[in-house]
Amino acid sequence: MNHYNGQNEVLDRITDAIFALNNNWEFTYMNDGAARLFRRRSYEMMGKYIWSEFPKEAYSIFYEHYRKAMQEQIRVEFEAYCHPISIWLEVKVFPSSDGLSVYLQDITQKKGLSLLKEQHYASLFKYNPDAVFAFDLEGNYLSVNPAMEQLLGYRAEEFLQMSYIPLIPPEELEKTKSLFKLAAKGITQHYETKAIHKNGKVIDVKVTNMPIIVNNESMGVFGVAKNIMQENQNKTKLLEAEKLTAVGQLAASIAHEIRNPLTSLKGFVHLIEQAVPGVNEKYFTIMKDELRRIELITSELLYLAKPQAQEFKVEQICQIVQDVSLLMSSQALMNNVEIRLSGLDGLPAIRCVAAQLKQVFINLIKNAMEAMPSGGVIGIHASSPSPETLMIQVSDTGKGIPQELIAKIGAPFYTTKENGTGLGMMATQQIIHSHGGTLDITSQVGEGTAIHICLPAASLQDGVVAG
Ligand code: ADP
Ligand code: MG
Image 1 (cartoon, rainbow, N blue to C red):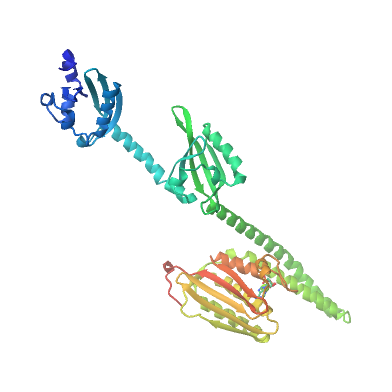
Image 2: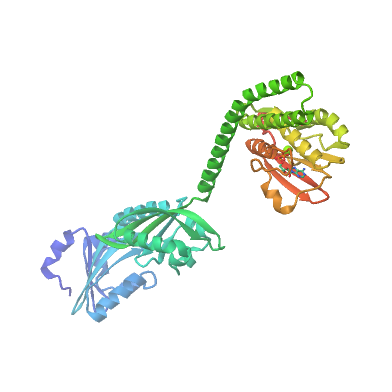
C-alpha cells in the first residue's frame, strides 16, 4: 500500500521525480518522472527492494542519506552526482511512519553552468602571472595560486599553514597590518611593501588587497602581488643614465665656454713671452703647462657629452685594435713599452661606434703606459667565449691598484696622477655601457692591472660573418 492514495494522478503529472519506499526499502510508488529518470517501468518496480535494483556500492551517497532519514526520522536534503545515469540530482527525503518519500530534481544543467563558471574563475586564479591569494580575516592563507608559490618560494600546502605576518620584514609589518585591516573592512588598498622569500631574500612587491564579500559581509581578503624588483632596478638605472647625461651636457657646455677665453689667454701669454725678454722663463713654463692642462680637461669633458650622437655600425674589433695600437706605437716606443696583440683572428663582429671604441683603447693604453713609468708590456688579448660575446683584455705590468681603490675608478675626477683629469675611465665606462657591455678591473699591486671588457657580438640578423 502506498500513502499517496488519491493524489497519485497529480503526482504522476509532475515532471520531477518522486518515489516512495516502505520500512523494508521496497518501492511503494514511483511517478512517471522517476521512471523516466531511472529508465524503468513504474509498475515493474512496485514491491522491489531498492538496493537490489540500485546497488548500495554504486549509490552509497544515496544509501547513507536515506538511512539517516529513515533511522532518525528527519528530513534530509542533499546534492549528489548519480554516476550510473550521469546526472546531478538535488534530493529531498521526507520520512514517514511507514517509510520514506523521495523527491528528486535533475540539476545537471544548473550544476554544469556553475561548474563552468567556477572553472572560468579558477583559470583566472591558476594562470594569472601575478600572485593571487586569499586570506581569512586574521590573515591566514586560504588559497594561493602557482605564481604566488613562485614569488615567495613556498608550496601551496606550506602557505595554508601560515599567515602573511612572518613573510613581511619587521619594518614593514605595522604598515602592512593596518592596510590589511582596512581591506578587510571593505576598502581596497594598493601599496608597495617588502616580502621575505623562503630563501631569505627580501623582495619589493606591489600589492592590492581587497575584501572578500559574501552576503554583504566581509569574509576575508583577496591579495594580488607583483614582484617589482626589476622595475625598481630599471628605474634606478634610468635615473643614473639621466644624471650622467645631464652631467655630461653640463660639463660640455662649461668646457665649451672655457675654450674661447683659453685661446686668447694662450695667444697673449705667447705674445708677452716674445715681447718682454728677460722675464723669468720659469713663469712662462708654468703658465703654458697649466693652460695645456686646462685644455686637456676641457677636451675630455667635451668628449663625455658626445657619445650619444654617433651612429652604430657593424665593425671588426681586430681592425679597431690594430688602428689604435699603430696610433700609440711611437708613444709606446718612447716610453719603452711593448704592445702585444693576441687572439684577434676569427672573432665575431660587433655593432659599435668605432671612434668611441678607439677612444676606449686609447684611454686604457694611456693609463697602462702611465702605470709603467720605466716601461713594460701591454697585452691586448681578444677572445670569444660564446658566439654572442666578445672579450677583450688590456693588461699591463705596471704598479697596480690597491684593492680598496678599484671601486673609485671611473668616478668623475678621481685621479691619483699629478696631471691626471680623472675623466678617462669615466668616459671609457660610459662608452662600454652604451654598447651594452661590461667593464671589470682586476689588479695586483706591484704586478699589474687588467681591464676586462665584455661586448655583445652583432646578431646574425645584422648579416655578419666572423672576421
Ligand atoms: P687619469 O688617467 O686622468 O688619472 P683615469 O680616469 O683614466 O684618469 O684613471 C683614474 C685613475 O685610475 C688613475 O689616476 C689611476 O690611479 C687609476 N688607473 C687607471 N688605470 C690604471 C692602470 N692601468 N694601472 C694603475 N692604475 C690605473
Ligand atoms: Mg687616464
